[in-house]
Length: 295
Image (cartoon, rainbow, N blue to C red; front, side):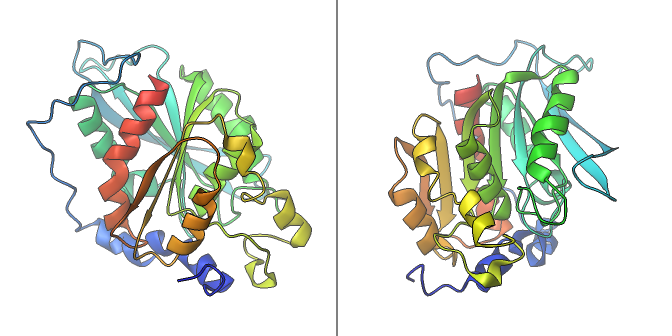
């Protein structure tokens, strides 16, 4: 399908599919099986996991953001620790950006990212923590209504994670659909000095502004200020991974975006749609990518 054929309204709808109809599937979809014989080596130069076995624990919390007027902002965290509850010092941090209609809870309730992180650690791969925060349906940038979830993330949530003892010099980003757009936008704008890698799963990106995208952008000028196609050269030195299913209606526009990205782009295109089954199928590879660059 040519990118121009796909309506912008449909793109907006796709940005939230995974947290709408697909959430029900999250309760029943089987996680990809673990291959117990896998002994893939950790890439040279990365940090191996501590000798003590690490167990992923989760917690949630909330705060009032100066950049999200009138709402409570909630967050989730999955972090490795020893059986005694000891957290390895200065773990790198991966920040997850959810899709439209979603929330912080999609990290654990939809993706089951804590279970995938545990599998990642059990293979002896470099440890990291993962955090998610509510972003509403703002497309992770400043909006005319006064909200600015990107600044909330950069100036409030990430510093909070640093106060919890995580290494802000080793940050990874990954997002899905609307959150994939948000992760690519933030990485392109260079507002996180400690950013080491970015991954986007089925990112909701497109080349041109259309007035029907008013839920994503407030005006043509707003689109131009956050045009990830125009910002592609700024990702030249950033390790990046982009995945999209070949049956996803965003496939054409994502391939268009990837075609002119400078430097190496990991990931790729395999059978799958715009849904949790596909995103879970690539998550182990996404975590391996992030671990290599954060270790």
